[in-house]
Image (tube, rainbow, N blue to C red):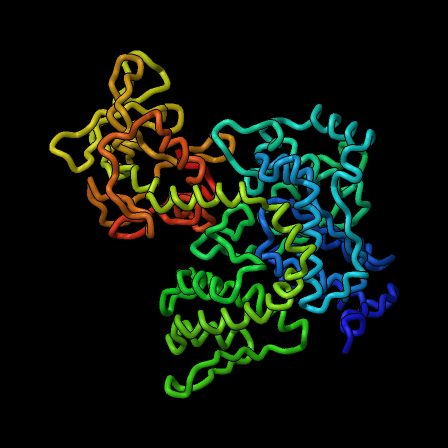
Length: 540
């Protein structure tokens, strides 16, 4: 069967309720969430649906993009008109993840990579429309609409909308606040009924639903796919090399990365390998009408294992009938089979040259420096420990500050000044087990010397602040470590080296409330550190 035959659209007779239902089910299957389902059904009763999916042209695309690719195939099968947006201007606005001088080259790289992915799973690319953002986003009319939105959108709403997509830093650039405005306007300028993206874009989608009608434009529907988790937690990200598998990684690199991924025997709740099979491999297999998954093993180890569908793999692993090593081996084999056509295509000399120009050696040197910093254990320089608040008092000379006595497992408690007065009462703080960074240089705050810093999580607009919660059974002085980055903390951090300033922007909480640095969990010997309720929150 040719790709054109495989992806031939379903009959689109709008008068047939059964056909409309089949198309709607195909459009929404395997999604985590959708908004505006009634509007989609209404449109399908009248005509074909127009959908767009956009990607910012930042770091090299990774295997997580296959989640979106399988849905593009579903949209085509459902008779939708599908536009792929290469959001080059967004890539620049997001904390300059793509330098201006490289935007054109990276856009070309993304176009080649996305098309190669689609072809590798048999999707006919001639049925898709490809658009580059700056081809219309710099026009007079679009620019005027941006200014109109700037005049009506609050800083709070713009920051909230981009909180899970735009890189969050202590002092954000204005460009990051403009990012969600452009993404909302793209729905109008691409003339679509629906925008499709990851569930991490939900706040931008609801932002668009709120503000586009203020400009006289219609509210669109939104489709959200599940996000593929990184190899050690959080989402897989193009701009986070350690979290992902690149499309051009060779077989050895893939087996090495998967071999290092977290995969505890019987653990099906926090398992990036199972997640990868569920949201990438089995949906791709379904496009070819199969669900047969084979793990190849030598006869001396029991021979090959065969499963029919993801549920069978899930149950076998949950029941400890499938060993983590076999699961990783099967995943690596399936992934290498998926990526081999892409790797072959990128052996073309023109694409090799494009890759080197779009991601030049300077970037590689920067990445090597980052890796060297990791190897040097920059995070291990921090001395973060469990503390217990023994006393809390108002600062004698500052209405916004508390002065605490905190037990950090030393002979005497430490005096700590914190700006928590508008967020918590003294009663809420008394006796709490918390996390303390204790090797900052002591600082005098309004006449009182502070000997450490309490670590807290806060929401995007800093209206809610919570302590980081050590695992049950913790005692003062228990040290927090980051797996794979263990080391001896410095006695006192050198302010000139800006260790804290370097690592703090990467402190976040995940959807499961666990505190992480980059993709690595905050841990003590007794378990992981969490917050009470704040997800995807900043930690400082």
